[in-house]
Amino acid sequence: MKALIIGAGGQIGSELAGALEAAGHEAWMVDHQPLEKCAGRGALEASFAQYPGLAARWLPALDVLQADRLAALIADLRPDTVFHLAALLSATGEANPDLCWRVNVDGLRTTLEAMTRYRRPDGADPVLVCPSSIAAYGPVTGRPDVLERGPEEGPLEPTTMYGVTKVVAERLGAWYSHQLKPTAGRGRVDTRLLRFPGLLSAVPPGGGSSDYANELFFAGARGDQAVQIFVRPDTRIPFMHMDDALRSLVELAEAPRARLTRTTYNVGACYPTAEEIAEAVRRRLDHPFEVRYVPDHRQAFVDSWPRRLEDGAARSDWGWSHRLDLEGMTDRLLHDCRASLAR
Ligand code: SER
Image (cartoon, rainbow, N blue to C red; front, side):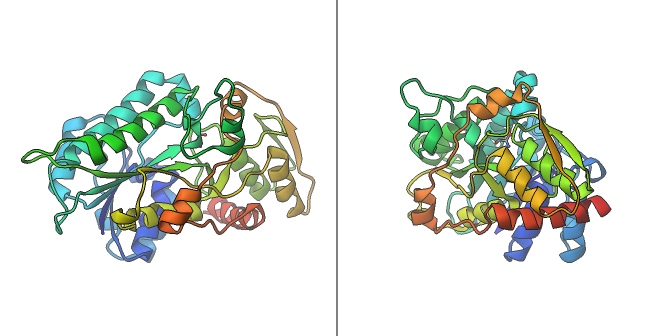
């Protein structure tokens, strides 16, 4: 596939380019920041060294709010698949709700609109893949099971602006996939969303409320003897290693449309409490690792998210299966965070 990654310098995008190349696809990349300022610069440069020709497909910086430039880029490149990853996360989004809406919703709609203007070389609808999130859920009166299970069919009553934008993204995806009435010069976009758990990798995330887990792995890798995190020890939300997340993005993009029964899929992996993550890190260190739990305003956001994420549809429709649980993930993350800190 000829893929365009929008938001290619961030936590997911900076590792997706290499994952696409490894799977035999051609990745093009754009971010709102120049390469030297991107959080994922180290991961990108490692992929550039591994895959000849990839560095030349890093495009000049472009903000998704520059709608005309973004539409022109898509019209020019005509990617058959777009991975739309440009977004504000929950904590930053709640502090800047207007910007969160503009980046997460308006940026996505600009991309979708531009993609209605062309077909794939084989005549099929172009494919857009976009993350949704556990933050699309929220507490529902009389339905405690929603936060216990994370049911695929919802209901979705998010409490953060970030969660609101993810529900809108899901509904936009369904509309562009099925409801848009094609006309001459304007066709549908085969839109596929994944409701992700908190994602863990050696690329620091920016402004999420699941970041407390990433902070534990980085602190362990740095050799810190004490760390303070912003949630209670019994806080439990779904988590996933980035390698599984990248594989889910690529596998969903590759899945034949005829096998898909929905536009949004849940993907789950493991469900540790903050204390269980801290203990998994501590067991692998040869020095004390004291964790202080000092909840702040982000505690309420994670408390509004489900503790599990049912993902039977992804497993049966396109063969989704996670590979890394908490133990495997901890081994990998400590190793990779140490390597990233050494760079
Ligand atoms: N990781 C995200 C956040 O914390 C949740 O999707 O905002």
